[in-house]
Image (cartoon, rainbow, N blue to C red; front, side, top):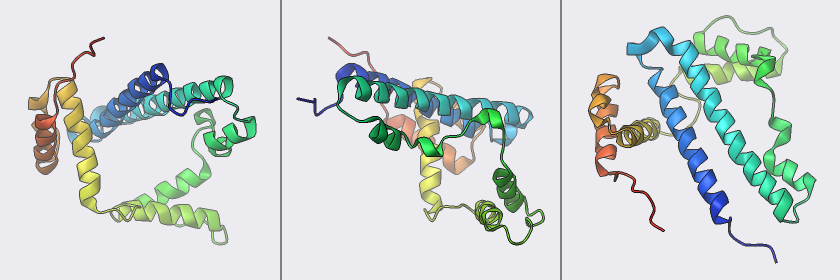
Length: 188
């Protein structure tokens, strides 16, 4: 009979990897702030790809477990891994990515007749106009504050929050960090 819960060692590994991803995501946000603009290109790309690679590791650990210890078919596993969506960063940015940036920056529209280019251009315009998603701005700010507050608590550097964040995000991040307990090692 197949277990109904994720095995504890796998669960711990996934939790560790997701925690690393959160730290990398916070760094991506950190390097978008104006006070460290000199390094933003290098560090946002490095930390974003670190986060992506770490989530890939988590996915592959789960997939390996499923393949070796459950009766999941390769077709089902491939569909869960959404392999059709995967593309290599080594290929570089695509034309569609450049269309989206054009929409963000208000540069000329792509050639008429290319519906895919128009869609990506419109997506870029959506980002430029305050966000692509219909979520309220407060939710995005809260998410950013949570990432910054968590990182500050884990690094025991809550005082540094005011130095680089907009005041309203820093205030919320301090509150979040204030209610988080310092992680304690698990006892056996």
